[in-house]
Image (cartoon, rainbow, N blue to C red):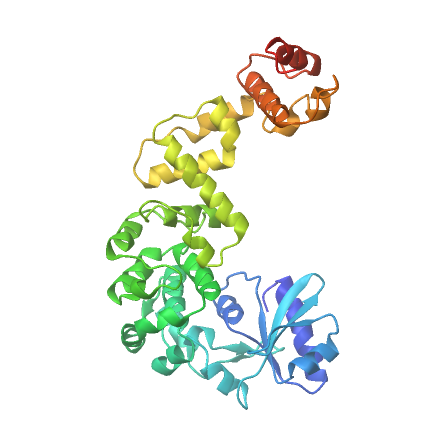
Length: 379
């Protein structure tokens, strides 16, 4: 096995299960990536043990998915998903998986079990399913997973599988939103995303997206934008938000995207709108923060709008006397020392102090700031 701590620990898990009379194998993407000589940090294990038997062997584990009989086993800060084998054999379990390149298993000795000829398809860079129509009907999310693997790997799609995607496209609307969002994000972040979007366009999958409905024009707009696997999730969702009219992050709630990601996307869209009429200055740079500013400029570049130099913006940011309110030499307690009651005036005064320091009208020193505020009748 490759020199990977995940694989080493996984091998120990397989051996322990085997010593206790259970079959156990590494399956799916980890085997695929192993054969492709790629590093992986996500290993799934299939075993003949039931969830109850797994939890007896590993008391610190917990059952994550009752429907699929999946248990999370934590070993030395590493998490492994252990799922009870479907069917009577590992071969039967593998035959029920989405793509042949994900339908391989590895035992504790490193032996590969490959009943669906996934290794041949890896060599030929082909996405194929074993009885594709049945596989899609079992789980319509596979319609989007096929596009995701096209985006990530750049492989061609088998003719029978492509026909199944076209025929079953409407089934995508039955997928739960929380499952859909993760696959869609991975699709947009793949190095071959345009190929995937072309399949989504030609098969009309975009009409049945769970949680939102892309129009043909919006999809074409998305296809025209530069997308990158190196982008953060926040920047990818922000880019996707721009193809809507008006740009909006509200649909992300329907997609069960986390509240923090939604907040970050909303902030970027707001500054993107402000940036249409204003250039960055010390005050707006301070208010937005550097990460937001750079993301907004990236979004403008994607939309073929004039941009400001990232290097120049970073230099301006670094030259700011303070970068957050907590760095201000005064706080609310300092302002109330003269006996005044708390109130909104405190926030107003601190804001004026921030602006004075940022725009170099006053140095960031306690006595100087208090004197400056007193002269303007804030205290």
